[in-house]
Amino acid sequence: MLLKVGDLAKRAGLTVRTLHHYDSIGLLRPTGRSDSGYRLYSRDDVARLHGIQTLRRMGMSLADVAQIIDGGAVALPALLARQISALDQEIAQARAFRERLAVMQAILAGGGQPEIDDWLASLSLMSTFEQYFSAGELKLAFERWKRCKADWPPLLRAVRDAMERGVPPDSIELQPLARQWMDLSSRWMDGNLALLTRWGNMLREQPGLPLPDGMDRTLLAYINQAVQLRLAALARYITADELQQLDQTLDPEWRAFIERAERLIGDGIPPQDASARQLACDWQDLVDRFVRHDINLRDRLLAAYENEPLLQAGAVFTPAVRQYVRQAAVGLDPDAA
Image (cartoon, rainbow, N blue to C red; front, side):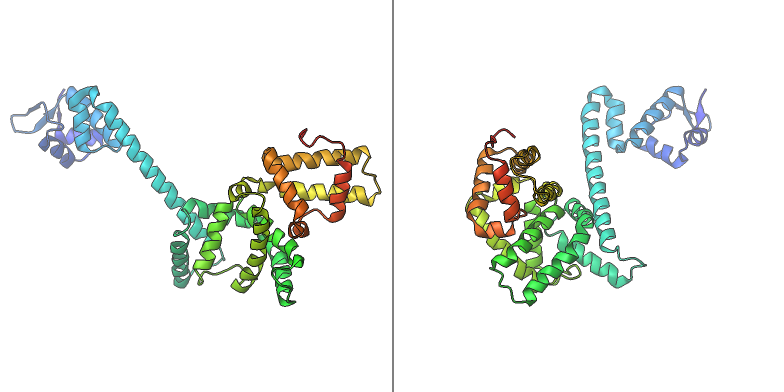
């Protein structure tokens, strides 16, 4: 059975013009022609067309299809590898574009229908952000901001109050707020200090960038001085890479630990009691996890908090809790955790 070009086109879901083009480039030549000159296609022609359409659906060019159809299986692996590589690039580009759209969505998440000025402002922000971060990093930053957004206003009010009262940025009094600022910032960036440093650089280098409510550049400069003093004190004992190594995700566990310690102290439980000794063991475990089981780093970090009044002033541990845990830990092996 031979099919005319119109019949084949109809049954294959193609246009006659497409089949004519395949014939003109030698990709699919009909087996014969009728007495009237019409193209006639055989079963082998239809099978070849099926192969052509299958490869076209994979995104291959007509030149590549011809190479496979006429060249046999030898060329297929290389062509498939090239096609997979091209698809991978398209997927990566689509993913990056999707992340960029998600960032735009976050920027415009104020509610209501955005006006043209909103779109232009968002595009401008996106352009600035992309000088410092990939779309994926921005997407994560905006998502993580939602998790800690509610914790910023009280801290900002406390910092502003200290600033307006004239508390010097190098004052010990400001260090608890500097430590809270560092902890909250680290929690926002999921402990990625390199990402946080780039964000700070962006704010300093892009003075027109809008800031969250309650935050301004005077306040940022003020608290940053206190933070830098804290970092300088730590730098006398640990490197910047080691600071990055610390597990900054343990803040909820530290807070729960402090509450336990304060309850034991409030209930008058002596440091020699089993519950206090367990508290000391848990403290050792937390410290060990905080330094990611690096004993040398642990010892130097503990020395920093032991010797630096500025670090002690901003520590989550009150002097009373620190003394209680120290007494409860007497006789415990610090390397047993």
